Length: 371
Image (cartoon, rainbow, N blue to C red; front, side, top):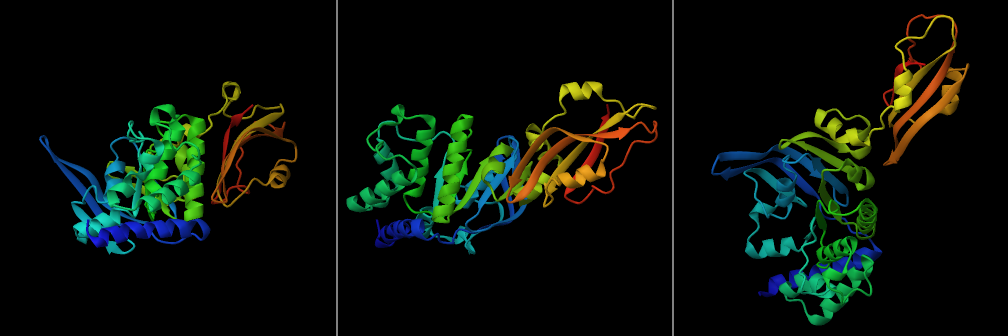
């Protein structure tokens, strides 16, 4: 190995050590008019088309889409495991297609990767699995020992150094995979469906770990997933892919609150609360004459507005009951739904009520029916 790659291999270690105390800022990625076409026996397959997206340095950026949307193809462009057919990938402003062999080796040490199925070597211990990138890079034994101990402490695996993968839980295996990806001190961490093989409780633990790593080290995390719940839990921004093209992109709170593309709406569907069966069975389309009626009203919060209970009470002075609620805070913004029953009185049948005073760009109201 030449002196240059050895020197490049040592540099990330200093960045990792310094990053724990003072997060650095590097690792911006730009996809510039990206297209990717694969050639198969059956003909050409266009996996990506016209992708033009910026990923800010130090952010947690999610890429989501249904199977075959092009998520993995896009992710693999970042560390040049794939090359675009059209367009450029810029990392910190540098076109990575122009990198020569030695520069590419050094660059790939700046980009760690975490895999869905862990990709650990069963015949090697935790320590040996984590140390492998440094051994390949020709780093000295003392430096390897120091850096492996550092990342194992970071991911909460102290005391597991001599264990073999067969003796570890799924969550522990993924922590080993994360430690291995971090040991070279990367500026960018790629996560390829990193939690899809884990149970829900372990998934939350791994996502919390990734968020903590992002906060402490300041590195950029780019993850692909098919689960909107993962995006909601951890990401700052999201890109929704549909058939290799950008369906929509933006801050997570904005995309979740006002999804504009049918693909995004379909991906969000599992997270939406449906109308309870008992209420749905008793609904009718209009209030009845001469009897006290309640309007079943759905209020969806999609941005800066928060539930103002006093305002709701003033709007319906004859009575208001909260029947169901599902609210999150994403990036400091309220997201979710309130379901309320508002008493209208017995003024007669009349027209269905409207809610002009409550409707705002961030609050969408809808009368579902009358009971």
